[in-house]
Image (cartoon, rainbow over the protein chains, first blue to last red):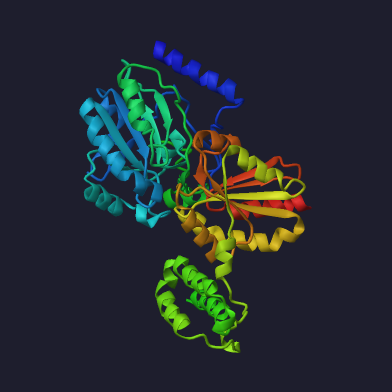
Length: 229
Length: 218
């Protein structure tokens, strides 16, 4: 509760100081409106198929102290640059009761190199110690408001109802240099402290969202609007 | 290789006047310059050095460098890639007040940016006489300026080029626009008063910006 209030206070202070918060809603080629989740907001649940041929959802990892969701893909040079670091961080922090979930937001019809078979090959090649999930409908990317690869969302501890909050949104590191934001934020969370800068922007490849027309063509309806119960 | 011939011819020309009238120091200077030249001149240098010391042929039309239309190599040295931080970016914008400004944030590591770069070059050629200033702003990794310049030169870009050097990306990105998550390609259109009129993010950005500029011009 205290941590939540402090996070909200920090965010409010940042809003006031900066004059305007990061715009939560932007338009990216394809997706007319992409709205970023708020810090402190409930992390959107999902159920995605992984290269291990299993489904994965947040609720499967109730006991983890933190979950690191990274929108990451095969083709983007930023992702390629980060992948070894992400694997190293995964290996290090999954020993500390943290779970990494890597989500590819680019479907094969938008980026051939980001298809499922290619994802499998990448995961094997790099010996991924975590699930690599295929966001085929892009609804998860949309729900989080992912705008680029790599885009990191760190979720805090689950409460009694299994609800987790978004505690950090940003890049893996500072353009290949320190600070390594994922490590810094996880250390802070695991120590029960407040994150100083919960939101950090960075340059990256845009997420290749389908247009509404493309979604309807592929699925028969707009998957962003009509959600299964 | 064209560059090498051109340069070497210039050096040969400068030392090929009768030896008696040229002070030794010029010969030595020519040789030193040769060694100071870029790596690609190196092999040529040693050959030429031998020739210069052994004989000093009279100047003739063959040693005078021919000025042809294809002299691209001077252009590489001419590519100005201005490093900018937050302040520098705003300064660059203010230099074009009175014009409509189109800034394209791109990177050599960004495939759609690379694909659409020729479009930006075309856009510039078409609109530069209509009071529109096109600016390319690379967000390539620090230390890759040479590759970026090479890319720009290869595409014959004649517009202004910036190189984002922000210690604090967060601050830079939000100073450009609070509506930008840092994804590229990203194109920002400013009106004649320097106010941000529109922003387009993603692969269709340049096309969308063009429509906006047309609207602003009418």
